Structure formats: structure tokens, C-alpha cells
Length: 69
Image 1 (tube, rainbow, N blue to C red):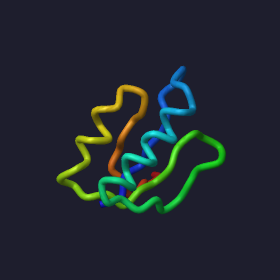
Image 2 (cartoon, rainbow, N blue to C red):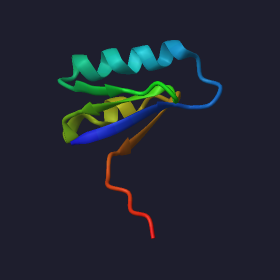
Image 3 (cartoon, rainbow, N blue to C red):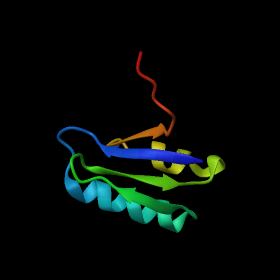
Image 4 (tube, one colour):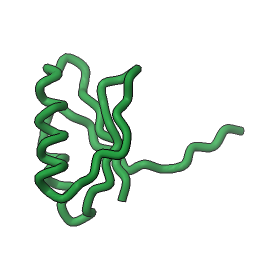
């Protein structure tokens, strides 16, 4: 499953790098790195997403389609 990972406000940029390393170490594949916001998308195993969610400095959200009215 694809997840959007973003750095929470006030968190040091090093935490985002740690999250990338954790994602790769746990079998994830970085798909895209954002330039306007501090974050990335990763194809990550559902059964291991808790390893990313346990980091208090990042926000983990399942990627989904967005619709406008």
C-alpha cells in the first residue's frame, strides 16, 4: 500500500531522514519525494506500517484519491 509520510510542524528534518531509512529497512520503496512540503510517498507493507506510525515526529496517511465537487 502507498503511504504519504510528512514531517510534523516543529520536528527536525533529521526525523524525516530517519523515517526514510526505517521505511527502506522494513521493505518499503520510496516512490516520490515532495519538494514543497517535507515528506515522501512510500510503497510499504501494511503489516509493518506501525513501525512508521510509532515515530512522534512524522504523520503517516494512506494515499487515496481526492475528489473535488
